[in-house]
Amino acid sequence: MQHQQPAALYTKMVEGEDGVSVRSPPVSPNVGNVRTGSRGLMDLDLAKNLVGKPEKYALHLSHHQWRLLMRLLISLSILALAACSQTSQESATDDVAAPELLPAASETVADEETITSSNLPNLEQAWVTTGFSAPEGVATDGDVLYISNVAGEGDAKDGEGWISRVSMQGEVLEEKWVDGLNAPKGMAIYEGKLFVSDFDAYHVIDIASAQIENTYPVEGAGFLNDITVWQNGVYLSDSGSARIFQIDVNGYKEWLADDRLGGVNGLTADGDRLLIATMSSGSLFETLGARDLTEIARGMENADGIAVLDDGSYLVSSWPGQIWHVGSDGHTTEIHNTEDAPTYQNDLTRVGDMIVVPNWQPGTVTAWRLTAN
Image (tube, rainbow, N blue to C red; front, side, top):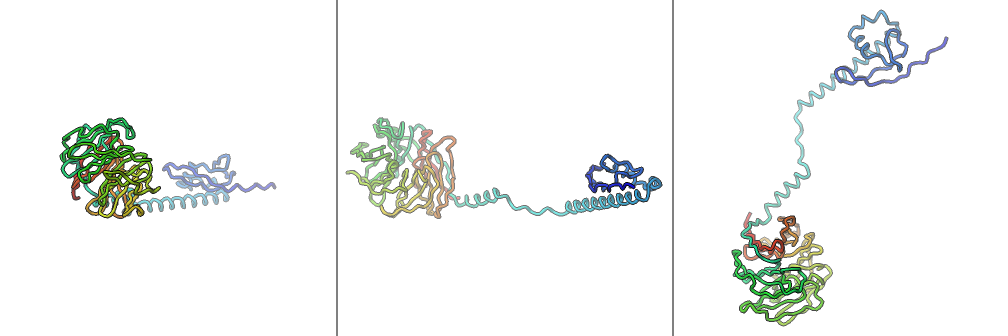
């Protein structure tokens, strides 16, 4: 007698009418009256009928087939119990309150920024005056603002630059108080004289007479920029050679040269400290003398003007359009950005409770008033 090979033990996922997938048990391909496919899979409709009415088909089944049927029924019962258990678990899950989600990282950062912003200075725009031509520097004698107008390229020696006088309320008093300059930028007043940087030279202007008394070309200068008064002296930065000069009505001398001063720009006095901003590294430095240089903060690319606030923190402008707050711990926060406009933020200068900023583009000067938060 030839023995039949036992049916392969395999299962198949089939889709029921209720959308629930059930797994059919392995069956013999030679079950009598039970219909099977080419791979020995029991017809699902017939299996359902057997489950619902087993007595109708019982007489047609052999003992071996009956055993197979029982296995099928047991398997389907197990599947039904499992489905009920899953439904019960899902229902129980629906009844349980969802856990409170932690804030996303971006929300946490936003909250921290909100907290931090309460400690930031509040700038309220006081006025904006138009009609300047590439304004860059600002100086004051306490009553009047002096604004330098490059009126062309920053390195042009074309005699087209001038200086305007503006009231503290933003009214232009004299558009061309002194003219015939090349590309005037940083300025400072000391003992009745206005010192003005002009690309590769500096001018000494007598304020009372509005006359240029002296002009001193600076040997090896690359791009003379800002000027400030500190400890009874006048200091001039050279962005092109990473140097700072000490100047007066009679001439100049090199005071500080350091590779860290790449693109040196803004200079501001603060008691026994001289504050220095650089464009290359975007750093804010302090020095107590020509041999001492300490970095306070960095990352403010193209840093320009500097202001010291009452709480010991700082405002620093980056000329392409940013204004930064620098905490006493060196933490930097961008609080204003007009780069897309574009509105440049050049030689930011504190004048009393105002922050005055020339805007090379679009040719305006903006005054901000410092108010308490």
